[in-house]
Structure formats: structure tokens, C-alpha cells
Image (tube, rainbow, N blue to C red; front, side, top):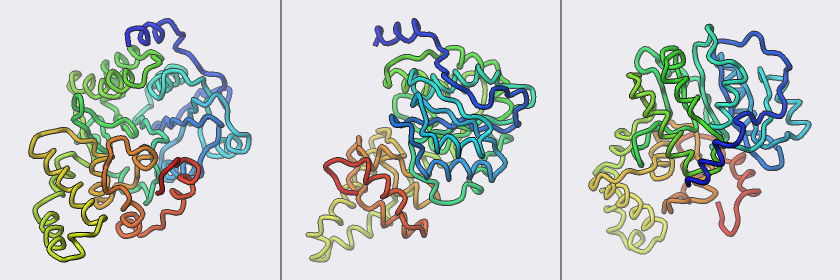
Length: 328
């Protein structure tokens, strides 16, 4: 880790290769800095739909890719609706890129009223974003995330972070971005920058909140949920059906974590509860790698159909290109 930090500090922090358009003298007040990475420079159709949802709700999108290139037809389409398209080297992961672009665009500007940091680590949105974006009430909190985590230290998860006027124009905001270097270590980036940005905001006296709170999600795994599984288990089918056994095992795992105050990752361990409460995304990592070995994740297509009322075809199309040695 010390070598990675040293390498990051020795690198130039500016890794931008190209910017379209050449000049951005005027920027809208509400900006989304949208991060992308695919080795082949392809932009998934779901991401285009995701960004258009922001625009339909009064935001302007600055598209940033760490791929070092973009497929020509994707870049042409992005130029049709984005305020800017920025291509950079894959140095520093998302936080290195966001810092690079914040400096390049001279943000915040006096007219900047909102900055949303979003990335391509999710499938979706599975429903319109209007209701979600309406909940970004900057009189109630200065910084909003969609979900919050207590793993390592309390933080808002960085796949979606929204900063209101008080946060954007605070000393803590600029102090944080001045501290970001393109360190070649994902672990360091997560622990120092993803967790760090929430901690810096809190220490600066700013209010941080999540639309889907950890407490709310944990409480959804209540006695009634468990008793339904126990009732089914009393039948011969419930005793032997592998799917039922796995669902019960996952519920017990969550309840055990709550009882022992073990921090869970809400976008993995509580994915079902998130979808049931209106969360419009699934994390790509959950369906591709399932790093925390969530046992009931195989239910995701049915839950998407039943709770969202949509077919999971676009997600399945992406998984056909992503999955190895497993089924959706």
C-alpha cells in the first residue's frame, strides 16, 4: 500500500486526453459528473437511458470515461445530449477522474447549485428517476447518497452522491478534492476517498443522509418475514426445496448480522429489501461476482418482475457478455 500511495503522488493528477466541446465558459447550475469505464470504449444502452433520465429531470450531464477511448458511434450519441464528453487515462479510478474534471471545469462556479457524482457500477434504472431526484431535499441534508454503509466507517456509498449548495461551496469540499491523488489501489481508493468524503463532510459540520437508510432496510427483515418462511418449512415441500432453504438461510444471515451489530453492504446483502422499497438499481458486482456470497441472489429476475413490473431483458443482455461459469 505505501508503494501504491507513493506511485499515486508521483503521477500527474491530470490524465485527461480530450474534451468536447473545446470551451465550456458557461455551465448549468445542476451537473451530473457521470463516470464510465469499459476497456473497449463501448457505452451500454442502459447507461444512455440512465443519463437521459437525469436530463429529463433538469440536470446536465458531463460524461467522463476512464477507457482512454470511445467507440465512434457512442461518442457521437453522447455528444447529442451531454454538456461535455471527457476522455482520460485509467488512472485513479472514479475519484481520480472526478477530481481531474472538477479541476478542469473550475468547479464549483458561483452558479453551481448541485453536483451529482454517478457511475456505471449499476444495472438500471428500472423505473423513472423523478421520484428519487425529488427526494434530494437540501434543506434536510447537504449531501445525499442513495444508500449508506457502516463497513469500516460510516459513509454514503459512492455510486451516487449528490451535493447541495452548502456542501459544494464549503471549505471541506475543496479540501477533500485537493487531497485526491491517482493512487493505483482500489482498496486505498475505497477506504480513503469513498469513505473519506463522507467523513470530511461530517467533520465540516455538513449534514449527510441516505434516501434508503440502513436502519429502514434492516427493519424490513422482521418477524413476519421470518414467520412466513417458517410456516412454509412446515410443509414437506418447504423442508426439501433448495430455493426455500436458501431464502431462509439468507434471512437468518441478515438477522444474525443485525443482532450482532455486524455491518452489511446494503447493495449486496439487502438487495431484495432495496428493490421492494423502490430502489431502481441492481449493482453489477452483485450479479457478476457476488463477492459477499449472497445466497438468494438467484431470485433477482423474479423480484424485478414482481416489484418493478418490468422485464429484466436489458440486464440479461449485459450478463450474457459478463458472466463466466455461472447462470443469471
